[in-house]
Length: 125
Image: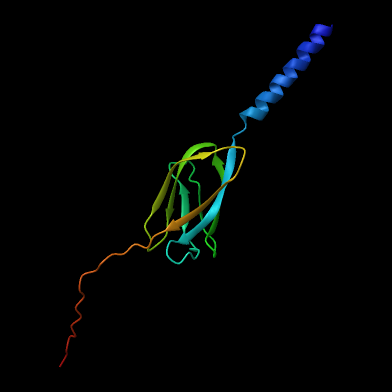
């Protein structure tokens, strides 16, 4: 009789441990995106986990702060972009289940030269 009770107890413990470990492990990544020269936060910058299905991404707030939730544990790559700035990639970022990741990302302005623009009036008589 004792063996049957022990077997039942062990079965319950085994089932509960499988339920706990079968849950998807995720973590949060937070941080701030700033201009590399002025050190001012960039509002509306996008942060995306590369090759995520479904797509995991967010947009920075008015101060340049962002928060990515439900990022799967493991090695990931991030793509950070903002209009008028060079895109930045962070590769092989290790996400652990034990602690949130905090990043400070600075973006450089992207300069492009344009050709000369000539405006000529059309005269109607």
